[in-house]
Length: 565
Image (tube, rainbow, N blue to C red; front, side, top):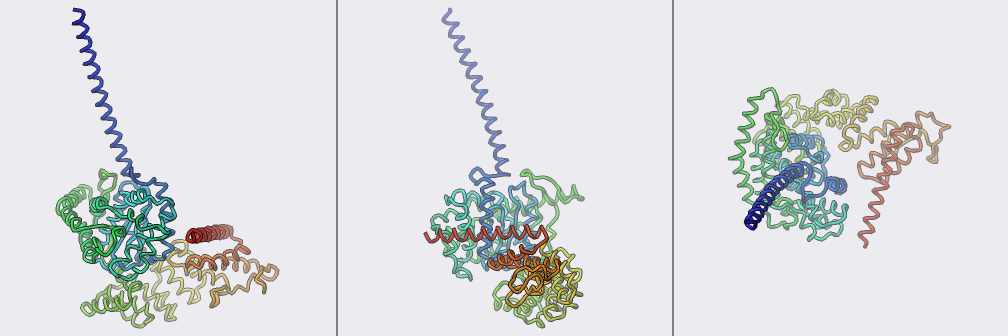
């Protein structure tokens, strides 16, 4: 009897043990699932489990941008950049919180390509823009690159590349992403391909890991389509844009080595995108319209599950503006003969085409055929009166023809139009300077360098001339004020104001030379400015710039030694 009871007790204890173990397992599973879900959400927003840390990517991004700048391929055209940035920023608004601020650039390359660099730096090639037909196609490609960045694909590639030093890695990335496009089937610019890829003597086998997988591309396509729809762009733009790229043998090209295909692709991708548009894409659009009807007075109609806002309105970017930028890039940066053939062909069929006449006018201005340029600008203005882009070019040409007063009359007020404000302010100030309105011109140039000095470095040059006694043919200041015959400061002979202005002249000329990458002259003038500058802010800035130059020179020496090894 006692044995029987003991057995019952053992069975009961075993039952209780198993029961509590099962409960503990269930609780552990739930906790684990909660942790995984929470980690996934945080990971989606802030980082990827297989990606670099945010701080590490930020460090690489700084080096990467310096490597890109050294290649001198970024187009500093305020109008083109404004369009690309506006499209990009409209898409970024619908994203969940991001670890980096997005920046957008146009690369002076003929090829059909775009890419996302470290730190959410997005690049679009000129040749891609000039080969697309509308805003939605350009938005489709930009949205795809934004999706790569938001998914941190570039960070995953970098983390898996096994290239140890940040400087070398940044150089390789810049070489692959800019150099890769140079090899697309014999297009101009391909001659530097090998050199670009092997920056820092890194073998191609190492750069082989710096390419997107097809899984990356599929994810970027899917998320890009969602972003586009929420931002008010037609997702069909991505489809038609990719078809154009595919037709030029970039996607899946046999000519380009696999490790240079920053965007591996296939017909299947296009089919998948088409399927999404026909199915889920329609639902996204319908949902947007339904929510828009419920909240007519709000542009932001909700928060999606990923944390992004949904915009019920269609994109507000003017399609005509895209066409103007497209022909602007063709005229100012493309092959002159090819551009002239294109514009002649369009104008034969559509002689009143505003954008084609605008493009031809820019091309004639580039060739210094100013009378022909004015003829096409007048033709363009006939069909689109008061267009700020056309009026701005008319003002510029009048300045070049020695009619600054007329140029001022034409451009006055354009500096308040967002689309052209900085460019208008610069050229209006140039016209005023030529017309003798020096004080107004000086204020204008100061506003330009406060807003966008990288686009208009000559504003520094003009300020140097205004504050000095002009600049000679060798680019040197004629500064009789403040210096004796030995080039030393002579405070006994000149007023303090004249001495101060001589220092300001050297300061601005130093900044001008720095922007145009004449580092030796920049250093000379910045050092000279410190002898007489009385403005503390300018003096501190000159010192900072000299430190940057010293660091740049040190980096160059280290790179030279490393290559000699």
